[in-house]
Amino acid sequence: MDCLFCKIAGGQINAAFVHQDERLLAFKDINPQAPLHVLIVPRRHIATLNDLGPADDALVGSMFRRAAAIAAEHGYAERGYRTVFNCQRDAGQTVFHIHLHLLAGRGLRWPPG
Ligand code: 5GP
Ligand code: ZN
Image 1 (cartoon, rainbow, N blue to C red):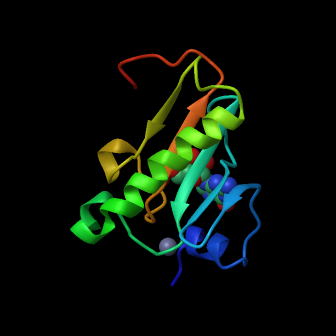
Image 2 (tube, rainbow, N blue to C red):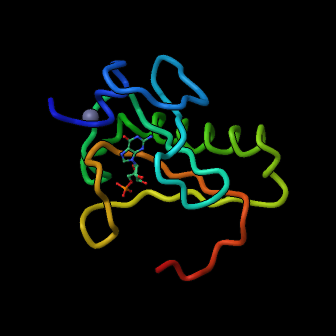
């Protein structure tokens, strides 16, 4: 399958990993939008949030818990951070393999652009 994040999961494309386990990867975004910008990605290919089923509830929960752990490891637990899933075109999704953005290290505006 011609999927960038499947290729990173398979080791065909390099990434700056901050975490790997049997279900999840986490690596630095190549075009960071904050001092800390990490993508939390399931190893299994799921194209968009629209493709999640009830059996994926634990997987998605583990993505958020991993984001919180990585934020804490980098010292942002108290100061704060943002987690974002972009879904489809209007939200700006460009890689169609779900990923949770973790952004930290600067004041983040609301509402987002
Ligand atoms: P989306 O726009 O789909 O929510 O987010 C995709 C993210 O993947 C973008 O923030 C983009 O910078 C990042 N990205 C695209 N290509 C690569 C790559 O080859 N390596 C890494 N580490 N991140 C990438
Ligand atoms: Zn994929």
